[in-house]
Length: 188
Image (cartoon, rainbow, N blue to C red):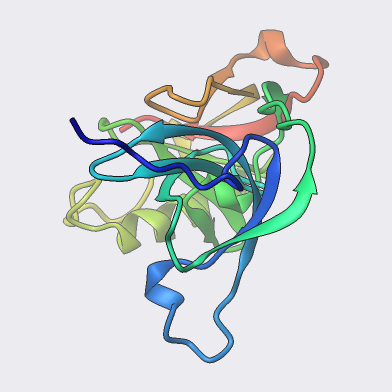
């Protein structure tokens, strides 16, 4: 029978800093602050479950990993933010023509976070050209402006272990609701 030895410092609520393996050899490797949310057995070791500040996902890191530094501070594990939110570029694919954009699912539907129709059409056209071969027919000469429709939308966080970190719903019924924003939608 194999016994896993726990590092006594690996307790829920302990503040940590974490350096990714890819950065370990850098002279000024960035260290990301976070918190231990729990522990679980891993293959031949105990894993610390850590959530980096500003992140909603859990990293499973061996408690003895050299890029994991344990702090002295121990507090409550912060609750995972839930409910409606306004997305940032970190939650989307990026910005094209200055407009935050992302594709939805495997169908290739696209949303642009802007209330300006012309900006949305231009950004979606550049986005689709950049994604040529992945999401649309590269023989197409752009985006049909009449197919791009404006809606009010709400974004909501999903539980941590969900397949997707967030969902979006759109429709005119969301106008005036808490955290509703204007988007433009382009079906595939």
